[in-house]
Length: 230
Image 1 (cartoon, rainbow, N blue to C red):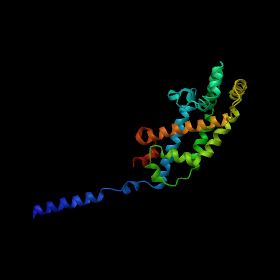
Image 2 (image 1 turned 30 degrees about the vertical axis):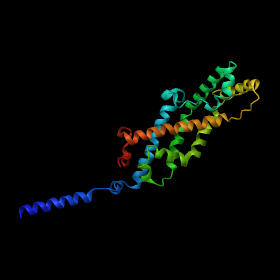
Image 3 (image 1 turned 90 degrees about the horizontal axis):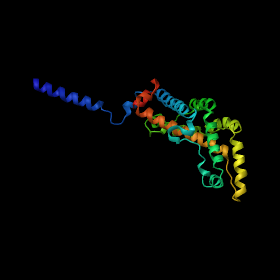
Image 4 (image 1 turned 180 degrees about the vertical axis):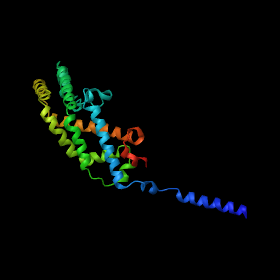
């Protein structure tokens, strides 16, 4: 009888253990409310925005940070305008434009960073679990998809008032004057729009890098990011 009781207890324990095993993830998901998940998602974005700003909106941020991968280098002009000017000894103008544009971008943090966070506050979240359990940059890409127009407008304003201050417009005009002396090939390029879109692309890329760090390294999380423990 004693052995029978032991066997029954063992079977009962096994049944309880099996019943508590979460094969679907539903139990884990229920540990956090939607409000907690939303708080974690938005905290992730704000920390990512702060990190991107700290890396980019500083001297040499866009120009040289992380082996210059975020540099505004006017790649679409390399084989047209830049090639013609360099061929005729005006490579210094090319270098000047690149430097001026990056210094302009680096100076915009005071206006851009608050806008990055404002977009987070107003963002509507439709799939909490899909974002938290998604790919490494799922939250950043969702933010980009729904807030791109607002973010571009927010960057456009400080850039436009700095185009003359940082001599981007003046350098560009001089380059175009030299260019038309040596070629009849028309060049249609919106330099201000290029700077704005490149800045936004770089900011989002750096935010996505920080999102990955938040997902994989607890040291990058704040107290309201517990939902990422899923």
